[in-house]
Length: 561
Figure 1: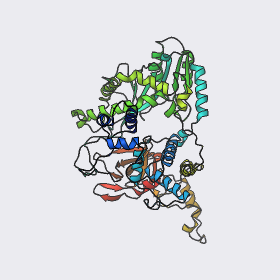
Figure 2: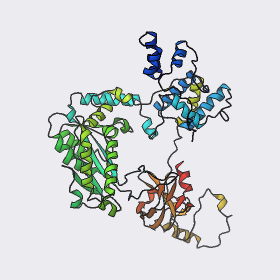
Figure 3: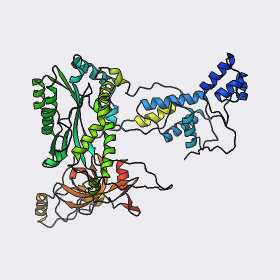
Figure 4: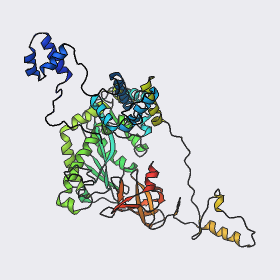
């Protein structure tokens, strides 16, 4: 950690005023509005300091001079901001190596830095000196999303303007899917100083419930549509929810084509008929959302269905940009409160019969700022009013630089921005292997013995029998999957380690581990779930025990690098 300066008791105090206050004070003295003694009392600035400033003496800053000049630090600051605008913000370690690269290019040796590499203390003081910079958490976006450029946005806005030019804001709708999870998230608590791993007893799970939300540019939100993960729908799961809310269920818990059509008919069309005139519905281009039935229905009801540009919903989707974040923040607070009730303590997971009441409470909390939030979302996405500048202002800007400082940043940027080589995805071929036999790839000649004379006429018959045998369990890099094997599997686009407890023809039942800080552990309540073979990535060695109850999964770290 950087050293934090602590003022010694009884030592003299340094300046406790800004440059603007000092400038105002000196102007008042020069214009003879007040005397120096009066200025000392009024602005709390020592009279000797005022005297020095008026005589332009001792103009340097107190303490050791900075390593770089003011112009150099301003140049660093401007390029850090440009890197952020370009989509590759630098962290403290990146910035330290950029400064080292700059010093090495100049051939300058700084004795304060070890091997010309600044320390964390220097970076912290640099941020204090340069107020335009701050240290914040960043969110990640895929490279495909970063590929959205000005031409794509302008073409989208031009096409959009032709369609919605004469449409009222109450007839411009945006819809999007989201989900609410059974995890209230982390929470800061007061613990004994030095506690490394504070824990809070709170039942959580990977359960999530899908929602379809839809709102218009006038700030009105339509009733939500809920989809449970279940084979059937039970009446208690639909009681006590928001007015007009509809409920459904699917084996996957997601929206498929039939459920989307039901939402389109029962929620969207029913509300669109209440207002006259041309209607516009804006959404993503998922295959489950676009069907011949939806297209015919739009023609009948005078609805213009507009698809957003691919990989751009983080910029162009009003609900994504403005509504879902405050909604999920409020949901975590409501869920956390429910976990402390007798019902929440008694049940290990979020109960479906409790969800409608919690959803109603969530919408009641959001109702206060709902209209302004939706309006701001449509405005920020450039939909209403239709304005490409709102979107272009949030796109990464191009960099045109040439100096030594700039070359150091460009060197770092080229490493970050380098394109990954596109390799053709290998098609997996299922092997037919008789039980008890092993397999070696034809190219692995080192594992194959020298051919021996074939004196057995029955060998060909044996091979024919092998070709007719087909086992359901696929072959991994480490061999066949079997019970008690440790594997890496994918759940909701995230990789987890686990142990196979049973296998079927279509997949395996896996007991999964959960992540705690940088290690993994077995959850208090056993988490067992069925996963298809396509979601099981590879077989791994048993996790390494670090300390009691905590394990390290080396293969998972290598797999995700």
